[in-house]
Image (cartoon, rainbow, N blue to C red; front, side):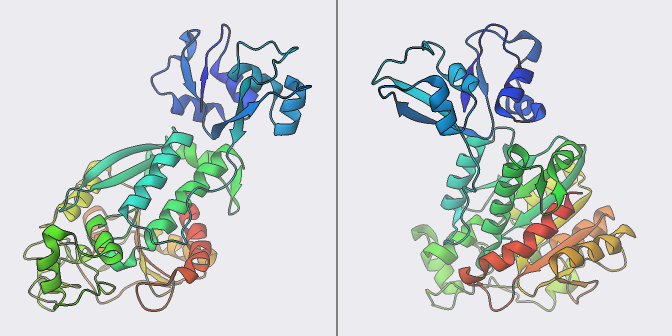
Length: 393
């Protein structure tokens, strides 16, 4: 929501008027000089949208404020030209409406287009959230990198490395939505104070690493790739078992952590799953994700996958000592089993641990056969959200 500055207005005053932390208003208006606000200047107020009300006979500013559950001062701010003592019948008033519920619904087929739609809505309501592109997919779709927080300490969380594990994307998107809601409405989320997290930690979230693959699983092959992907899929138009990107490369088998060894025991040609490519980091998606951590130097990394109700936290003995403590905490809050080592190489978490000696985790959400049914979403989200909020501490 936007308001227009009046003479004498301050960002601190808006913070008090709307009961929004000042830092969130400041970060929603990064190009505004707080000490030089000019009358008529537009200011973003996060956590609000605008409703409209047609004045009825007998309406007053104070009655309307009470009935809409808002401060009368906010009505005067949004409607600077009205006479608060005499509202003309039929006039349309702007009413600030605090957003108190989630926009993101995880219980639907969640392709790239749905993710982008939800992302646009979140950006409009919470402009202190930032979005950039970490890179692009084979078909040119952006790998969005969402940032929340202003701390120097950085945590990276990603989802949908595997196409038929697309349910991880709405899990991460709903987590972002709930985190934003907490910052603007409620001080605590899953027992954790969120504003200190915002101040101390910068969250980087890539909700869909394999957008081409997710769209393939949910919507079928794009015309320009139909012949190729159907051939890779052995003539079948059932892509529910497809884990790879659009070129038949398993993106989580692409990283230079014993890639040469892993490639000897995996498919040697493009496949719906497990083909590690002809060389490490051959795919634009994996190059983008590698460049992201090289540039940002994250303190920890979490990769959301399905399934197993467990997570993996070690790699070749290279994980730092604090990984075990974090693993114990994550297991306690989520109920998931902490597993130190598995017989697997060349994953994103593996390479992160190997290269940076920082805590890395592969989280296997839910239980069953991929793709997991949407009927599991609430249960999956309950465990995942507890783990994810604690990952930011």
